[in-house]
Image (cartoon, rainbow, N blue to C red; front, side, top):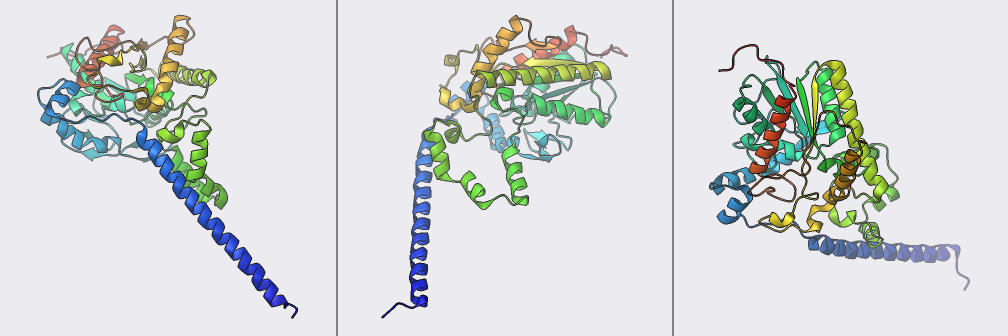
Length: 393
């Protein structure tokens, strides 16, 4: 009997259905297996992990009061809590705690009440990333807090110090944050920028921020990104293929990016230097002083064998970019190629005794004090503050 057209159509439809089902099962299986492989690769990457016994906490924080720092650690997750903000893309979320606080203006107090932007008297704005914010330490143990303490000890009780640190901020975001304050009519007497490690963490030109991926996803959803492109951007198989081709970022899975070559490193150094030039020009035109701090990093000049607990290179992830960027900037500095006015080069600084880092990159209270004292001394030495109008008590 000759097959009817309907039977032929049925066979074609059945074959197509079986093929599509087999393809779907194959894709799901390969995605699942690739996901398991990636999970194993990521779990094998060493991370900074310490049992926070009393003895270990004493070593990390140079303290005889380990309970205080356990309390600080309980609030630690709030120190990375951010919310959307125009132009800079995100800012610190307001929070009130025992050891960690941020007010509605994004200012972390230096212990006690947050400084008042509307109050009279000299104002010092300090911008930076999580090392400036003071990740892992109390309100009164951050770099800005120690700057304020040092200025008061020197008789400048009239000066207010504002901690505008935000996790993962680097020089471009800090410049924009300053510009937003200036256009709102809020001007400091001194603007301090503590930079270096985060600029090289984001080895991407044009600039991106830590919120870039989530904002891209939202934008793509609104613009109806092609489904195949969307799926491929989330595919475990694609990620595994990238890893096998040498893309180290697949395993790191952090916010930053690796510098692929020396040209990338040079571009980031140029970005930091250019932001400093722009800020200094703005300060000169609008009538305030700018101070740029090249911050210490554990990837340059520091002997990591001094740590109480070892840190392997893999633990530092994208921060290893600074191991290439800092030597380049040091060379450029010696050759007079970098902006120098108002630059406080602290790249080789470390505490004379005790521990410097409480994790891979964040400073101990002791190191924060050493850095804060140097910044305060530079402000005083350069005469950046207006003269006292009344005798200091």
